[in-house]
Length: 469
Ligand code: NAI
Image (cartoon, rainbow, N blue to C red; front, top):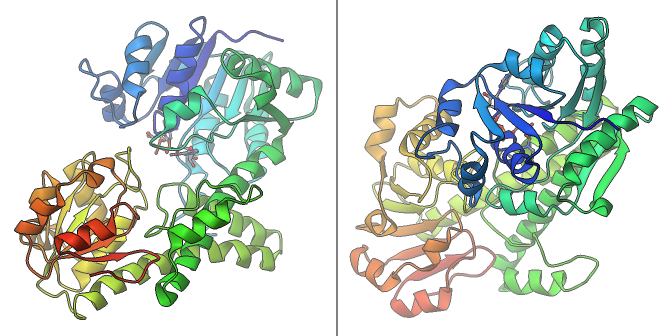
């Protein structure tokens, strides 16, 4: 098969950046260029002091090793397309906000624009790889657009290569993936393109972990994988509600259930609800797909996974209000963590946003602290969550703090929203001294030792357990 030496990635985000930086590291013989329309993002990738636009453990080391050698970041999309032999399309595919399928279907506008630009600019043959998560059969639309616009002697082969990395462990996941999935047409040309991409991954991924399947199976497998992961969380969270009502302990139940080798121990942690840019979006996408295919029972089944997640967030906010004697008006609440999970600065669909919005609408004061999320991002997310409130009003109710201790000062309650390791290591006796009494802790991540905190004097409420103290 053809040996690829020039790779382009369109989209320098959470997926395109780390994925293609790792390809550059593992394949010194390949020149990798990552392009984006967002100048500020590209400037950050190129910044002399490596202040990268996304926080991901290990990422900086990879970029330091390759940038300027065989890894380049640029806004010149056209030049990138012209030079490349293989192009990853790694642009955003958010849930549609209006029009047909609003609230469910994926917005494929960015994928389509990138595809049309490839067709318009390319003067030689390209392998085009769909890296973004897309509904089933999107590759077919891409192929139609490319073929209708191609020039003589210019052929396009489309592959689907969904990304399974998890934010927070992206670099480790990319170094050592459970599997790499490549979907192609089962034609001789499709198979040749597939093996050209498999050869790139073959530089560091064992052959048996590179799975090659049909295009549609590949696209559907990504949606299916996220739906099944999210479903485990919603199943455990549904059980956590039963635990709180009965005195069972969700950690003990998860442990016992996960010991069954058919179930397995991972991804069974109860929490205030899943967040992130993918789970909800991809399930809604699957729901929309099922409905379009006239499979309403299938749609309802998957939709319930998202509904359970919304219920879990609502239930947690309500438990805070109930526990604080049915009112939090005028009370100060410290929210520890704003990112949707630990080890990332990403806040998309973070449970913290919903909780703070709920506390605001009860007219509480909120102190928020997160070790990675930048201030502007917090204001942006809170404004979006309460479109009716001007930012200056939000700023009267919410304060952004520089440390956990500062956030807890004079608060009546601490809410743990993100499982950052540093929250495990907080000096809780010190925190207790500076809080109003009775001092409450609400652990939305099963992070702290509830007994130890109770011994200090806190009244502790943990997801999936009756209250202590
Ligand atoms: P992102 O929003 O961080 O990055 C997308 C980038 O594409 C943006 O910087 C945007 O400016 C750029 N872009 C859009 N249209 C462009 C164009 N025509 N030309 C050049 N640049 C363009 O999104 P993220 O998180 O990287 O996700 C990308 C895709 O990967 C989505 O489909 C997502 O569902 C999927 N995915 C995301 C994962 C994650 O953990 N974030 C994991 C697996 C898949």
